Length: 253
Image 1 (cartoon, helix red, strand yellow):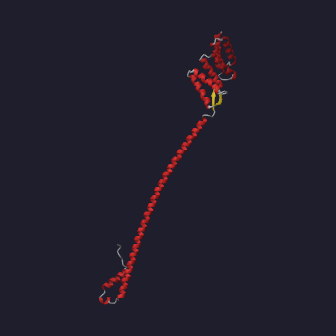
Image 2: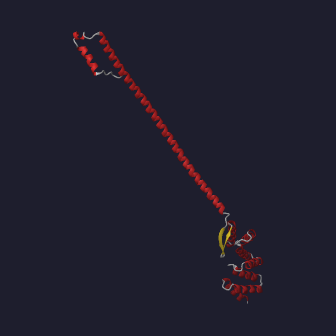
Image 3: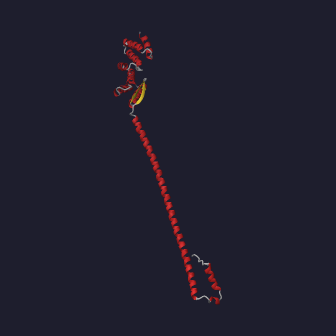
C-alpha cells in the first residue's frame, strides 16, 4: 500500500494542536476541529485516488507496451515468412529461366538439323542438307574402312535419294571406286564416264579417266585402255593422273 504523505502545513497544524496547553486547545471549537479532520480526509482521499490512477495508468501503459511488442514480433515473423517466400520465388524464376534457355537451345539445335550447311568437297562449295552431308560421310567412311560392298550400296542409295545433289559427282567417283574394288568393272566404267560427261572439269575427272583405263585393262580391253590413256594425257596434261597414264601406256606397248 502506498504511504500517505501529508502537506507540511497541515502536518504542522496537527502537531501544534497536539502539544498546545489545554488552555490554548480550548480555543478551537468542535466545528473547526471537524472541518480540519474532514479537510485532512479529503486530501488523503485525493492522494489515494491520484496514486490509484497512476497505478492504473502504469498498468495500462505496460499492457500497451506488451501488445506493441507482440505486434512487433508478429510483424517480424511475417517479414521473415515473406522474405522466405520471395527467395523461393527468385529460385523458381531462375529455374524457369534456365529451363526456357535449355528449351530454346534444344529447339535451335533441332532446327539446325534441317537447315542447309555449307560444305566443300573436291574443290567445290555448295549448300547441303545436314542429312545429306551425314549420309555422304557415312558412305565414305565405309569405303575408307575397306567395306567396299557396303559403301557401294550406300553410294548407290545416295544417288537415288538426293538427285541433283552437290555431292553427285564425288559420289559417282567413289561409287565407281567401290565397284572397282568389288570387281564390278563394267558398272564402275559407267559411273566414271557419267562423271566425265557431266563435269569434265571436276577435280576428280583425271582420276576417273585413269580408273576407266584400269577397268578396261582388267577386262582385257587393251585397245580401249590405250585410247582412254591417250585421251587422258591430252585432256589433262598437267595432272598427276596424266603422269600415271604415260607410265601405263609405256607398259601397254
